[in-house]
Amino acid sequence: MGTILAISSSPRRMGNSELLLQSFGLGIEEEGDKMVQVRVNDLKINYCQACDGCAPTGKCILQDDMQEIYPQVASAKGMVLATPIYFGGMSSQLKKFIDRFQCWWQAKYNLNKPQVALEEERPGYFLCVGALEKKAYCENALSIAKVYFHNVNYKYSDCLCYRGVDEKGVIKDHSHALQDAFEAGRYFALQSSPDTRKS
Image 1: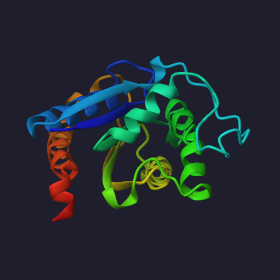
Image 2: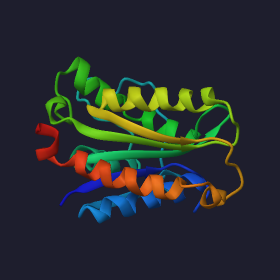
Image 3: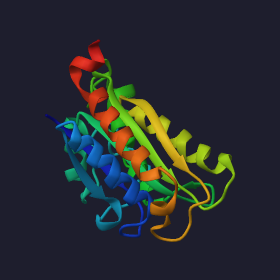
Image 4: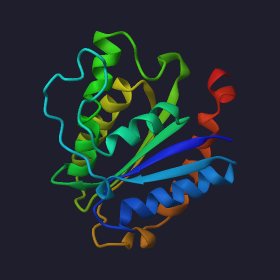
């Protein structure tokens, strides 16, 4: 049994991306693991100031709720990001969260002291929901998520991206969406097992 960290970045409670994430979590629990959900919108997080204060140590000098998040990312056996799609990109909440890992970039590339060892191959998953039908609107957010996973030494695993879903809660009416998320969570939990990753 291990802990999988879930980052919910919608400003709406029980919005479409959060409902998907909850089903994903039920799949994780089905396999005996635990999902810990963090709602970014509930946290007090400042924007990265590009001050390079993290350059000497690989640690962010801003004192806010991110100081509680960094250890969770460092210790989780897997991580899933969930976001609505706004204007063709991820939520501003999630982007702010990601940008605050500049300190981890410094630790990995400039100090050669990454917070997570690359060889652990901890998996990362991406969930997103958007109102517009164009596939490109999801791809922009997915591209950023992949860069984030790479920089924090998580291995991008897969994604579920739903389009044409707008009003709060209507993902429940989307054919098979919640069941797909449940099954994806089960598979992700199996991927997160160190024994599975080594096989």
